[in-house]
Length: 285
Ligand SMILES: O=P(O)(O)OC[C@H]1O[C@H](O[C@H]2O[C@H](CO)[C@@H](O)[C@H](O)[C@H]2O)[C@H](O)[C@@H](O)[C@@H]1O
Image 1: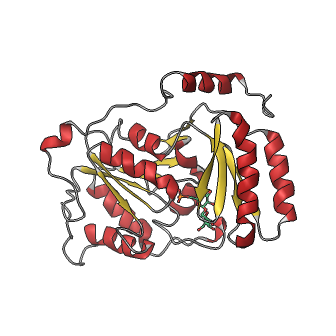
Image 2: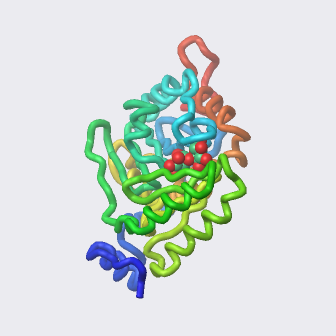
C-alpha cells in the first residue's frame, strides 16, 4: 500500500506512464530539418536565427549562500534586454525557481519564464502562468521535512507549489541524511515523484516534466518558433534542456565545460550585443 494515496490527477499521470511516454511535451523534433543548416557554435551564432533559453542560478547569476542572497550583477539586465532585442524577443529564463522569483530579480527582462524546472510556464510578458497537471507532493512529506530540517542545524526547507527543496549548503554533513529521507518518500510512488539532485540541495517533485519539456514547449510558439534554441545551464537539471536544444537543431552549452564561471558566461553574452560605443559583436549577427 502506498503511503501516498494518489489523486485522480495523479492516477491519470500513472496510467499514461504505463503506456506510451507521458504526453505532456510535444515530440516535434526539427533536427532533421536542420541537416542543411550550418551547426551552431559559440563562433557561429547568428542572432537573427537563434533563441536564448537560459538557466538562472549558477548560470546568469553566481551561486550564493542562500536562495534569497543571490545578486543580479550590474549590467546583466541591460545585456539581456539588448540580447532580447537582437533576437526578436526570443529570450527565456528556464529555472528551478518559481516564476515570481524571477520576476523579482529580472523584472520583465525575459520574454518568457519557465519555473519549477518546467512545471510552470509563462509564455509571454503579462500572460498567465500555466501549470502542468501534476500531483502535489503529499502533505505528510512536507510535515516530515519540516521536522527533519528542524533537527539538522543549518539545513532548510524551500517550498514550491510543485514540490519542495531540502537545502544543506550551510550543513554539508547533513546532505546524505536529507537524500536518504527524500529517497524514502519517493521510492514507493512507482516513479510518480522523484528526487532531483541540485547544488547542495535535494528537490522532491513530481516526475513527468523537466527543462527539456520547457524548451520544446517554448520553441513551438512565437517568438521562439522557427529559431534554433541556444540553451545554457550549469546543473544536473539543465542536462534535459541541453539535450532538447541539441535535438531541435540548436546548441547546448554548459558551465563550467564551455564557460568556466557565470561571470565568463555573462561577459560572453555582453560581447554578443555590445552597448553603443563598445567593441564589435563577437560571433553575432
Ligand atoms: O534552475 P536554476 O535557475 O539553476 O535554479 C536551481 C535552484 O536554485 C536555487 O538553489 C541553488 O541556488 C542557491 C542560490 O545560489 C543556493 O544557495 C542553493 O544552494 C542552490 O541549490 C533555488 O533555491 C532552487 O529553488 C532552484 O531550484
